[in-house]
Amino acid sequence: MFESANLPHVMTKDEFEAAETRLRELLLDAQFEVAEQRRAAIMVLVNGSDGAGKGEVVNRLYDWLDDHLVETLSYRKPTDEERARPGSWRYWRDMPPKGRIALVLGSWHHRLLRNRALGRLDKNAYDNALEDMIRSEEMLRREGVHLLKIWLHMDDREAQKRLEKLREANGALRRPAVIEWDEIDGGKARARLTDAALEMIEKTSTGNAPWAVVPASDPHYRDAAVGDLLLQTLTSAAEGTPAAPSTQAVATPESALPRPSLVSALDLAKTADRETYSQELRDLQQRLTEATTAKSFRNRGLVLVFEGNDAAGKGGAIRRVREALDPRRFRVHGVAAPSDEELARPYLWRFWRNLPRRGDVAIFDRSWYGRVLVERVEGFAPPEDWMRAYPEINDFERQLGECGYLVVKFWLAISQDEQLRRFQDREAKPFKRYKLTPDDWRNREKWALYEQAMTDMVDRTSSRLAPWTLVEANDKKFARLKVLRTIVERLEA
Image 1: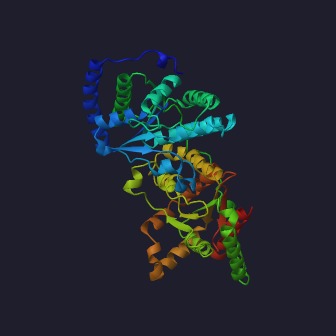
Image 2: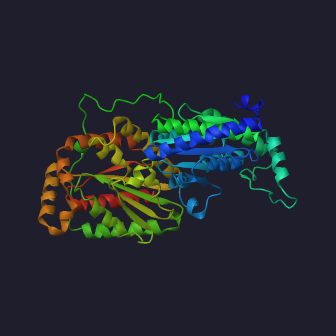
Image 3: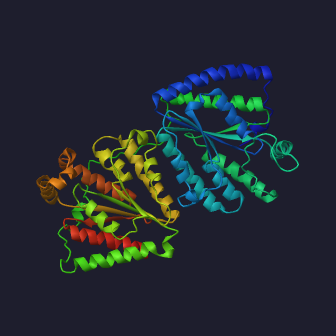
């Protein structure tokens, strides 16, 4: 992979000054166009050997760009706040909005290589993580994030000599340098690092997010090459060209064949026993309190997802769950249409940033499934977007499960007649009128479309780690007990 990078790549001072003059003008023009259009975010991932000049490259780009529209994202060992959440959380937290450029040091690639070099990942785990990375980067591309993945290549012995020249006898540095691999010590660990880097570049250099291996021995050539790569990326983003052409065919979302809905298989006539309801409710709430305050829960997190028909009783079910939780340890997130800030970032960003710390609970009243429900039915998202959302959601929830989070998802189903009765009841009561909107009435006309979208959603996203629970909700008391019982049994299991 590095054969050509090992050949001499040198620029004279005059050649570099001529290239710099050209690049500065073109980079600024392209940067301002991207900022004005706000159609794409740019992430420049600067990776490579210590001593190859990662910090120098970042500083050079600041010289050539308008620094008001640039930010540096640097990641080292996770903080306590970051360790309390899934590993990818910190990258989603800092995702740049469209129109801006982020220069990233210590990206998700660095974390993975570090763990492999230190022997914390075996071959199978490393290969699986690379596959996950490919899917995540493809999702970012489709969401308008242009990734420029740079590997500054330098022979390891030469890089070590450069670092030695920078250090005083007491270990202090004579000038700033980005040192990220200092804990990879010893011949075996460094050999594993080199092998892992080669494998990562080979496997994750896709047509949509290729790696650019830049020879770094000559600083002039290195900086000019990185500047030219960034210019290509900015130009592509400004022209509205995808980061790379997609070669994946989008599956046909609709079928002419009739399909039964999952709701039609539910017995919506189920009811709770009125005489024992209150006692059952108290018992289940007590079990939920015990499960979420036990020592074993401190290293886990609970994510509850509530979806369902309008007026299906999600709020009432959530209230019964809330009553059993320590108010300091949970948050309810009511999900509505995305804000401008959220639209400026990839779709899942607003959900990643609201994940709870381990030991806490997040309750989502509506959720990331809006893309495959309301956005699909109302035409807010084209078929290629909501079709790709299924595997993206599965990846998201699988990452949560692998990090010790329990994802419990509910669909509360009611009949059309029961919905009409509840709408009329809301209209008649002043303190309930706020719950009813013109959209609720319009959605009744699309009942069959929502039912089909719900069936597809459950078919495609009910996994072993995060299965869907369909709740017969014509009787609110029955629904509340089923919700609590499901949560408690999943926690206790």
